[in-house]
Image (tube, rainbow, N blue to C red):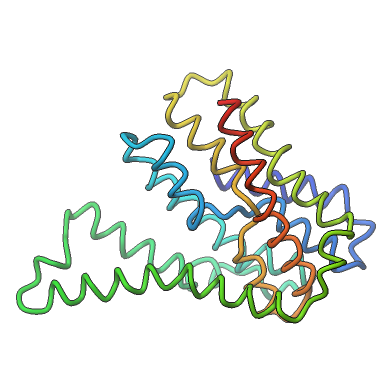
Length: 240
């Protein structure tokens, strides 16, 4: 469902903006509209809203994996217009997919690193530190880009507001309307809608840095989306 949702959003955005794809800001907007900060902000929000719904973390993980698969492939293609990014190899051999597959093996085998004699606790501690570093690292990259941009375009460029409006207001309400009529667990519906309305993902800016296109546009949209999430996220949770 997360894959279909992101593909649908990117397809709709592409159909709307394809005649304006010469502007890299529009290409970045297609990706921003689909990718949300489902890990760094989504997980703590889900844990706060639904503290007894332990499956929420797994749903967040599937969103993250889907986002990274599309980011390394279709997302990079939309920004660069280079078909070399769309390949089966890119889908499987990227850090997020590899890590998720390994974690699934541990999960289904009920295996814990701490159970390994002598080194288990140390390995468990190292992985926990690495997990905590990921948020800080993304924020540092975003901060470095923020230090090089002018603040005026951040708040005056209408494209930034359009990207935030689509990602953080329109998309979650559409998802809410679709799921409302489907007989699914209410906690699942709430989780899915909240994650759909998560602010624009910081990883979008990381992808633009790697492919060296649209870095300033991505940074502006991510920063504005994060700032406005103070309003948009509570609005979504109130509706639920």
